[in-house]
Image 1 (tube, one colour):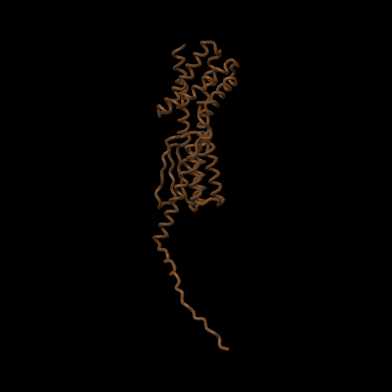
Image 2 (cartoon, rainbow, N blue to C red; image 1 turned 180 degrees about the vertical axis):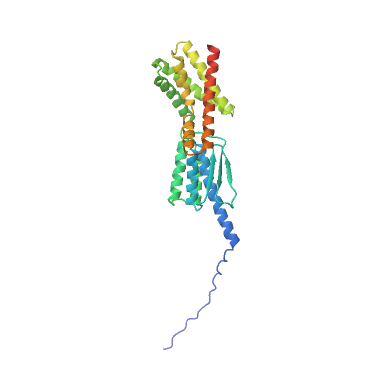
Amino acid sequence: MKRSRIPLKYIPHDPPPPAQTGTEITEKNTTEQSRVIAICLLAGKIMLQSGGETYRVEDTMKRMAAALGLPHSHSYVVPTGIFFSVDATEPAKLIRISERTTDLDKVSEVNAVSRRIGQGELTVQEAHDLLLQIEGKPSSYSARVKLLAAALSSGCFTIMFGGGWDDFLPAVICGGIGYAAVIVFHRLVLVKFFAELSAAFVIGLLAFLLVAIGAGHERDKIIIGSVMPLVPGLLITNAVRDLMAGHLVSGLSKGAEAFLTAFAIGTGIAVVFSLFT
């Protein structure tokens, strides 16, 4: 028997992709490096704007960069800006921080993203998307809730500092209106010092008026309790922790900012006493 031969047909194959040149590889690595730098700067910006300590911001940025392939990064953080560099050949990047508030929920969420990056659970794009969501997320507490908390805490502080229960309600009124005054004045005047000074003046004025009409008895206890929501407790704590961690510039600048806030509160109350006593 003769075997039948099956004619073979030549099928041309696609040519192999051309090898990447050194320039293309360098450009790809530079693009990826720039994305990692942008992620680290965004994470540091969110934390610093939300009340994170300086050493925590620097440590988080370095850990994220190392986990994403940049082990030799350098970060320098001060309350008004972030400097970040990865090596001697790449120019340092800078982000200006103009507004700072207290939102420890965002700080915790950025730390969670950093841990997930370190465990290899997130890609560069996924981490960037999560950080953008955190940045655009509104505050966990509305202005109404903050106002209510400030009013109630003022009454409780008044009792704690030795005031009577008949001073509780006047302190609640003074503290609530004073905290609202800070929000309103800060929108009208961008200088935080004058907003806090004006709010302290309003608190002192209300305390004098309420005691004058018989709504309260111990004027000093009412004033002390009412100004407590304005006291920069977190700022003082962060200043001390930064100084203990060796960040002298950040610690001293935060301490100076806390001193200015305390000076504004004292000045506002002193003006009221000088007018009515």
